[in-house]
Image 1 (cartoon, rainbow, N blue to C red):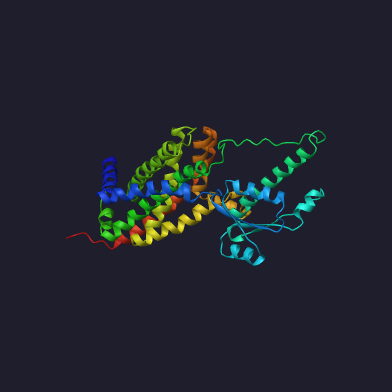
Image 2: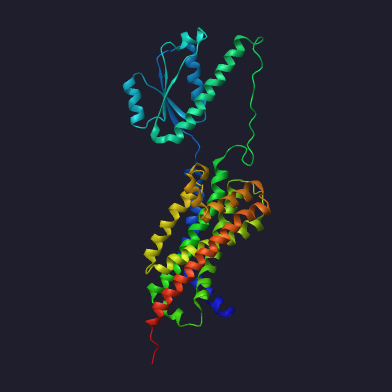
Length: 381
């Protein structure tokens, strides 16, 4: 039985690696995504444009504008001279926000009253706008504290100060969060594609009936289709892992044994989804569309795009059945903070439950489809 299984696995691996073009298709997209993802999917606000409508032209407003121009979030500041021009730069997305200094800004500051600065933010870029406004508020508050200390250095009581320390990602570098998550996403894509295409490819090539009349049981056929996905996904995950450590200089804090051990359970859970998809699809095109029909909800529910805690309660309960959610927590935890065995196990057992459910359903569907197909196969006379 083991020899038959090994033969089937070898056959699947040869189908995946049959020529140099197929091998490049397994490696080059991974390297391309490793290069593009950390730069394209970043949530940091950089190289944005800030528009200034200064109706005051006093020394305080000019000082603040100079500080805004030096902030790392803003590559360029542009001056607008009318409300119509202010609306135009927002409408055409030439600036993420417009700051408007009123005419009495200097007078209010000299009179020790609280002047107001109007900020108009492009709501179409809500995340960038919120982060940019946070930078601007911090600059204004720093300037106000400096003025208060300069005006009354002896009488002013010492101000309270919050000392912030970021654990596991000291500089809040988005790359440190994205690259470990990319290990999970690339593993998901490769596992689903390899398993989803396997049975559908047999049907398209007319070799599915030969599998059914072979000594292999449906369970052995499913296992033989899942093992190559384990090899391919692990190899691609290793490429991302090495790229994160050596190319992006992200410190790997945890245990490789825990990471790859949990990855095996994760791939098994995904194999159930992929084999179920492959069992109900007649062509590879249908199976490919089924993969992406699963991928988009899986990524959205995983917490990669937005935190799971921000979702409605009923949707948070639904995310428990998303294997990507559990594996992203494991990868980031092992990678960045040396997650212990108990913590990894708390997110691994849901993967085992999901694997048991998906593989059972896939096995039932596969046996039923195999029985229907096998009934039409007539032995040669």
